[in-house]
Image (tube, helix red, strand yellow):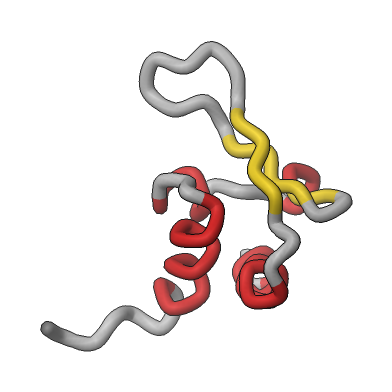
Length: 70
């Protein structure tokens, strides 16, 4: 296996610990991350977005880093 892109090293834990698809994590905006929750955009045939808890310390840290880079 090759090395992961440095940006993906922050996104992967958020996706893994929330169960969200990578594209949903990458598309997150600051306003969609509040009070320990992520609001993900609707995926494929969904009509509404999904909420996912972000109370894990690694997820919070990775999410902060991803959002600051945007």
